[in-house]
Structure formats: structure tokens, C-alpha cells
Image 1 (cartoon, rainbow, N blue to C red):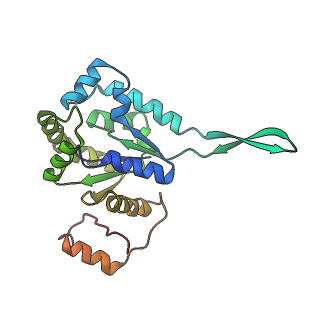
Image 2 (cartoon, one colour; image 1 turned 60 degrees about the vertical axis):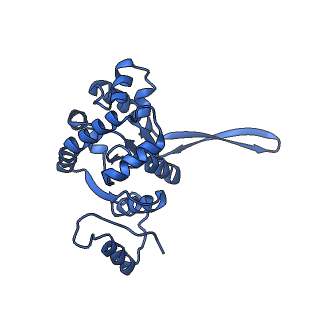
Image 3 (cartoon, one colour; image 1 turned 135 degrees about the vertical axis):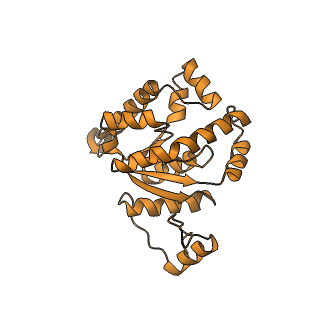
Length: 232
């Protein structure tokens, strides 16, 4: 299981969907899960850009994670000499992508207290400048993307993200910082390179000269932030 971190508009949902589609993983869009509960308190909190009730959020996520961790059984039909029969094939559980969870320190604590943290292999942190994030949020035209709500969510993320990421790291969760600027495919390839380092996807080979050139152009040669160029 991995989780995607980033300010609102950083591209978490887009990348979560792309990873799920490419690798057959289970993508959990926690915001959509909570909205589908049709709980007035939760809906109001999400609309205002404030923290959702931690117990309700944790219970919803726990149920989905538990189901995703179960082996999948498929019924395969065959026909021989006009007779139809089926076989059951059991597949290993899929990797899970958490999108929007944990949202605050209480949810991190819940993961630690109930042992869910042991299943969390890594956290991808998408880094995008605020100016670009604002442009993305305005463009997607979501009902709850009012200026006030956006600013509250951004401020909340800025206040809490560093502490949450530090706590996750202290509990054995791998942390990967990824430049979230560029095309969806470019960002996906950067994420895949981190996941390759973690052994979750096949490791790709990149041209070191092209990599150093891309870093130099972005001013990242002396930075610990990873930047991966598009494959040549």
C-alpha cells in the first residue's frame, strides 16, 4: 500500500488513477468515499476545506483496505464438447493506493495504533508551486473549489504535511518527493522511478547524462528532490 501526498490540485487523483489503470492496483479516492456516505457533517467539512471527523474517515478507509487485501477469486467459464463448466482462479491481493489519507495527525496516529501503518510501504509527495496549483483548481471547476476553501486547504496542508511525513518516516514508511510539474505522463514516470527504487514496479533505466541535464535546467543538481526526465 502507498499513499499520495500533496496540496489540493497537486495531481494526486490523476496519478492515482493512472497507476491503478496501468498496474491493476486498487485506487481509493478517500474524498469520493466520504462524499458517497451522504453524511451532512462530512459534506459540509469537505465543502469548507476543513478536517473531516477522524473516526468516520478511518472507519470508511479501514473497510475498503480490508476488502482490497483479500485474495480475489475469478470464475472462468470454458466449453468442451458442448458442455460448459467453470473454474475458480484465486489472484493475490492488489496493491492499494490511498489518495487523501491520512489527512491529519489524528489519522496518522490511528494508522499507527491499529497497525495499518505496517501495510503502508511508502508515501509519494507531489510538489507543485502554489501558483500552478491555483490555476489547476480553477480549471477543474469543482463545486467546493471556492477561493476561501482552496486557501484553507492549502494552509492546512502547509501546516500539517511536514509533521505527518516525518511521523510516517519515523515509523518505517518510505518517502519519495516527486516534482509534480509537467505533463501527466512525465509525472507518472517520475513516480514510477521512485516505486521502482522501492521494488513495487519494474525498475526502468534512465540515461544518466539526460538525467543530469534535466536536473541542471531545473536547478536541482544540489537538491535532494528527485527529478526524472521523460524516457528518450
